[in-house]
Length: 55
Image (cartoon, rainbow, N blue to C red):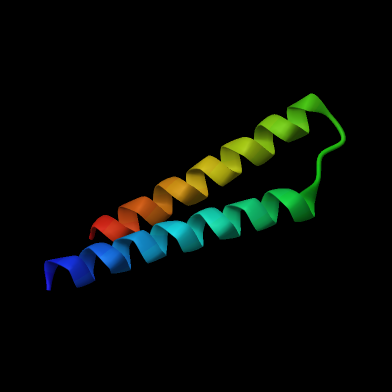
């Protein structure tokens, strides 16, 4: 059972990371400031996914 829960957590984390990567690619950025904002948004998405997976 514990392995199943761990697998589910990893799946959620992978999904969040994939989604964040997709958003970063689709939004694009014309400036260094825009790149920083995209990276921050991606980091927040991964963080939220990790928090969801741990609950």
